Image (cartoon, rainbow, N blue to C red; front, side, top):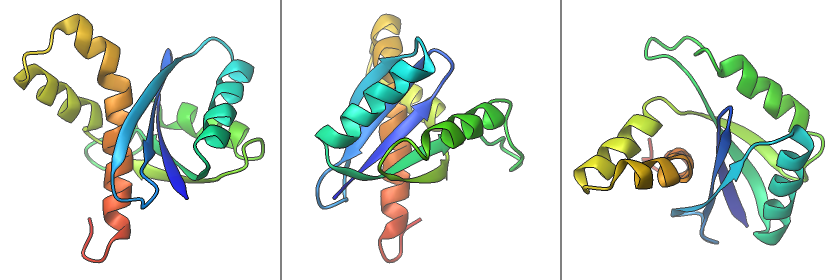
Length: 140
């Protein structure tokens, strides 16, 4: 069994998967969004290819706990895929995921171009790792 993490944006979807023991999240790829049907096709292919049973979607929530501006868009995306993909869908608070990943990349002296290239899949990995950690006794 594996889990998949998604960081759903307007232009891209960052994708991460867990190892088979569901302990570690690994960045996988970035899907460049063009149409819903193509997004769905690519996510479905990745779910099959990696034997994913659960998809964890990062939900954009403001620091005060209220839904962020992209929250409703992300919820609509979930509503559209949930009956079309053979995996359970869970959500996870993605607060600060992109900022945390960007900070690490800056501290690692990654170029702006390189940061832009990897930030979405690393954010998906950060979201998924938070979820995985919460499953363990004494987790988040």
